[in-house]
Image (tube, rainbow, N blue to C red; front, side, top):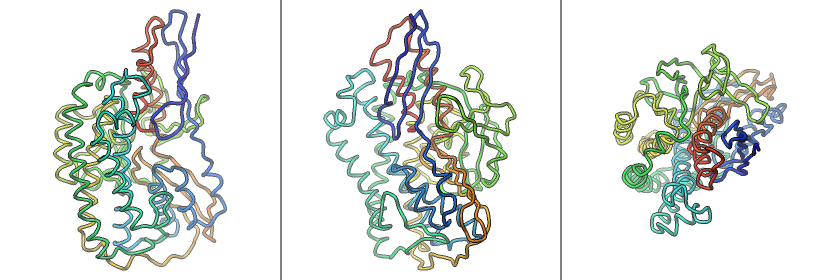
Length: 449
């Protein structure tokens, strides 16, 4: 008899989802579906509101990455009103976004991904969690908690709020950075950089080598990639050109204001989430693992693939090692974990660069603003992928239309495909174990959705 297996909820992810696996009469996988409760409604209920209020509203979309929504929204409103923030304000915004990236990566590696690798994918679920990791490696767990807390506290001490921030304002930033604040935070950033370097070395020596077979095979699919690069083709998180890469490695670059010419959005009957696809490839949309159409991935592995290099020295060294091992584009899904740690090194290095820039303490942090009719696209790289906020305003500066493509949604199609591949490769002749189901979840967790 056919059987339906449900994994609900998917554990150790930063949202809500479930997996349905349908087996045929022989106990082999007939079909899989990944279900997401990702509808938020922000695109509709911001309509009619003053544009300058929107950055304080959309940061509620996600409690894990509120800074990225806050700042993408600020960028979009700036462009609606035709205002350019002063250089110091741009640096402060980028600093906040970079620090939010860094602590998010520590959260994922140590709290969400590590139980699979430290405790093992077949360990009992009662210990395959952050508490199990804390018991197995108490000193490391305590330090990871302290490092993430330290990063959060830099955000909070300077901006006032680490979660649901309000420090970014239309035309700039709400306050300048003082020299005293800069001197307080810099030593902490150097300590955090040291910990990020320790983390990637620990992962390369103690974690990844034990699981390279799984890294190369679990949830393996072949797709394109999307990320942001600067004028030199280096990885960029706050601003730059979007680069869309085909599975064969060929690329096209475009300004984020033209995203709708290159990307489309598809709905499917089994998910509330929108499924973006590469409209520019003119091949349509298909989630068939053997013959996908229009499918690309975002997030850290995508950014590492589309970038020609990194802008900071230690991250560049890690980047070169990664590319020498896995080529370009690297397709293995579990390599997201490795790419995430390269980005963590980059984030702390770049935060130090920004903090050491003497211009960051300039007191001119806000330009004058007049509401007007216009359209603005604010785009940056959130931890989970390219984040796009697209607003239109009327003559009074009220929002008339909004469209959002949130980082995770770029990967909804790829996640569905990776789960399909993992389930088909692991479930044979009706044999299903807790370890097998956890491995299927691992193919989701790699994306950090």
